[in-house]
Image (cartoon, rainbow, N blue to C red; front, side):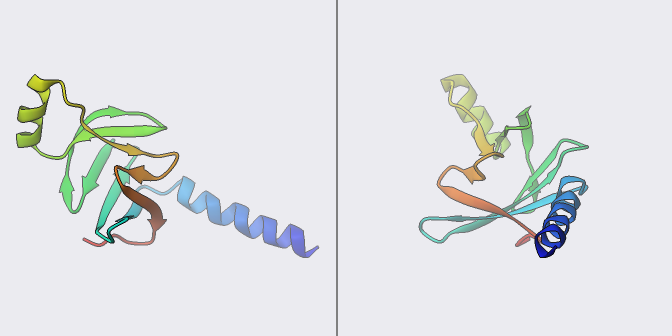
Length: 105
């Protein structure tokens, strides 16, 4: 009986994040640098460290984006790829991310 109750609690807790308007991610690198994301799937908006970023591609598995207009202008002619937030593994470059209640910014 306890297993059923715990399973139901975990199921409903996971549903809260699945249907949230915005998802908050806190990320930490191996050198202890921190950054945060706000993801809005409905409006396809990505905010990194409090600044809205230009989206290149938005998929369930990952989001690619330009960090700034300057980086885009430098990178595109050289065929450099935009930054990628992996939504499955929760990684962004050398950062490992996890879902949190609120962001750093």
